[in-house]
Amino acid sequence: MVAVGTLAFWTVVIAVVLSTWAPPGGVRAVVASPPGVRAPASATSTSATSTSTSATGTWLLVNVVDGDTVNVTRDGSAEKIRLLGIDAPEIGQCGHEEATARLEAILADGVSVTFDDGQDQDRYGRLLAFLSGADGADAGLTLIEAGLTIARYDSRDGYRRHARQDEYIAADAASPNYSCSTTPAPTSTRGSSTGDSPTTTSAPPPVPSAPPPVPGTPPPVPSAPPPVPPGNCDPSYPTVCIPSSPPDLDCADIPYRRFVVLAPDPHRFDGGGDGIGCEGA
Image 1 (cartoon, one colour):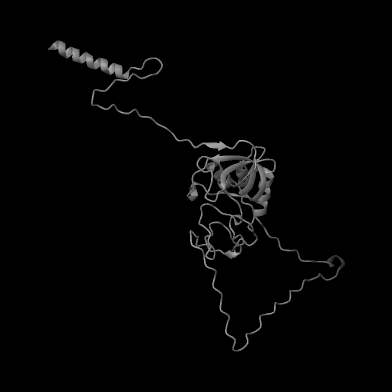
Image 2 (image 1 turned 60 degrees about the vertical axis):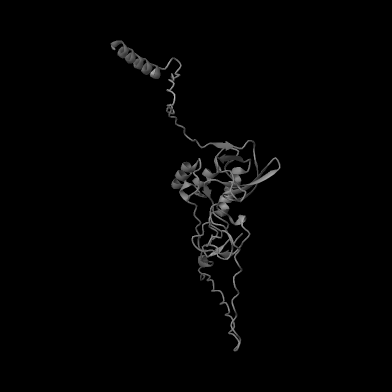
């Protein structure tokens, strides 16, 4: 009886040693489980890392639509690219011309395109990517730091988080936005140096009012607004059918001009704040 107990004891000890001993080289010994007993799965940890793929070769700039959209070509293939993670002023808005000119200068000598993992194209066929010029500087970051664009369309707005989101947001917070100041025309003082009276500008003549209606004439009947096509139409644009964001659209991406715009205007078509969208397009 004692011998049997001793043998069982040493059998258990040997099994424990074999199950924990790791031979040289770091390979862990594996003890087979008894029949009918499933061995526990080893715990493994994996971390998903977002990677970016850089397009090989150099793309040529065809034209800059605005501060966040360009047309490029390579090997006979033309593409429209929407810069990831930024938003530039639309046509007619403050800073539109400045942002457009700055992006043209950045990309004048060549365009390097970098796609963010999982965000290569939107439903309008535009490529979504980061762009840099011949010197390798990030075009989107450069525009943000100059105050000509803002960091937008990232995970804060319900979009996917992109690889440069934190850098863009930090640069936006540290950079003042571009300001368009209007300076009133100076009052003419011609003749003041010679003692003559300053020249004054007379007020413009009043605009004649419309003639009164002829008695007995019925008032004109206002025409009904054109019917709005069915579909995913954003209520901020009641007289036309423009899809809601995302994706962000520019005036160049839609066929409509001078249409009614209501708040909140997610695409920022009303640059003048007068309730009319894409006036200068």
